[in-house]
Amino acid sequence: MSTRIRIEGGVPLSGTVPISGAKNAVLPILMASLLTERPCRLKNVPHLKDVTTSIELLAQMGAEVGLADQWTIELDTSRVAHHEAPYELVKTMRASVLVLGPLLARFGAARVSLPGGCAIGARPVDQHMRGLAALGADVRIESGYIVAEADRLTGARIVLDTATVTGTENIMMAAVLAEGTSVIENAAQEPEVADLARCLNDMGADVEGAGTNTIVIRGVPELGGYDYRVLADRIEAGTFLVAAAMTGGKVHAKGADPRTLDAVLQKLEQAGARIDSGADWIELDMAGRRPKAVDVTTAPYPGFPTDMQAQFTALNAIAEGTGVVRETVFENRFMHVQELQRLGADMRVDGNMVVIRGKDSLTGAPMMATDLRASASLVLAGLVAEGATLIDRVYHIDRGYENIEEKLGQLGARIRRVTEKAA
Ligand code: UD1
Image 1 (cartoon, rainbow, N blue to C red):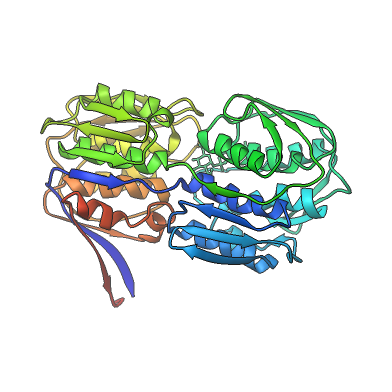
Image 2 (image 1 turned 90 degrees about the horizontal axis):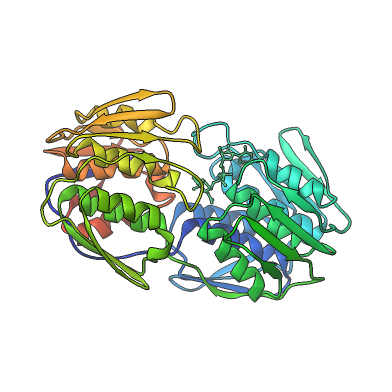
């Protein structure tokens, strides 16, 4: 059986779309349940493949995981007995590496397979390992596994070479149970790092400065459980707003937090969109206009997110004028370009840059999703292309977008999932 997404383009999107909880906050917070023997409860959890993989990983270790309701997960890690994340799971989701810090902090031992995940560059984990070693752990690589051991971690000052998101989270989760004070300098400032810190503080941790580039963590002997509601997914929200802008439509993103999307909203305004927002909503009105091309350079937060790069590449494909998109966070993150060219997009890759000359129209064609965010850009292009677009390997989309075809369908898009017997 093969499942594809089929889109008939050309409908300006209109209406309200509910924004789900943030995948990139849910994953570390689920793993943070390993830091305590007490029960934990996480609310606003989206239905995503990466969430299922995280639950499977925790369950394999001996955690009890259940659903309180459709969007609420309950976790009890009091009986966790295995301290290992096997290759089979880690290769499908790189964020599995987030169990390293919590396991080491609570049990003094962890074995985590070196990650696979999205094929978007080398994506090493050296900073995770260096940070945990600075806290006093013995960290080494053995037969493809990161092995970390420590009696009790001790606070340290860690200056990261690159502001890695999951690296910052891993070190932060280890340091909350260390003896003494830790400082992470050049820390990632992403809203999801701050959300994890808020949850850790609810558990009784003492973390200050998360969301800035210096995080101070005063270790505590033990932590309690959490009952926490995760923040909204800024990347999902941004993707729907780009969809509205590309189709000349008007979309209200309900639950979105505009404070986490400054760089993206600025670019959408430059593209000609009118944007209104409140504490937990953003509305974009394109009033039937064609977007203007925009230049974009990705950077760590608060810069323009790499996870929105492919979507803006798609926007430029049908914009008025020429746009230049530079990728500075990951190498090899232009795999969507080849696919978008199949719809007639005029784009040329030159090193870490893609130059896009906007076309009046694109034409539907079969395409193949290559990674999570790239696949979102294919859907966006399909929404404006003339005729039918068929997207293969939709499991990439399901890793990070909850019910994307249902949500777009509610906004008027002609989109559905088709399952056929393989030829
Ligand atoms: C997280 C997000 C992902 C997003 C990315 C960048 C999660 C689950 N995923 O991924 O959606 O695209 O941030 O915003 O939150 N690096 C090193 N050494 C390390 C770690 C990273 O050199 O030990 C480099 C990477 O190769 C990359 C850069 O640092 O060039 C940023 O990567 P990082 O922030 O670690 O990305 P992730 O945390 O994997």
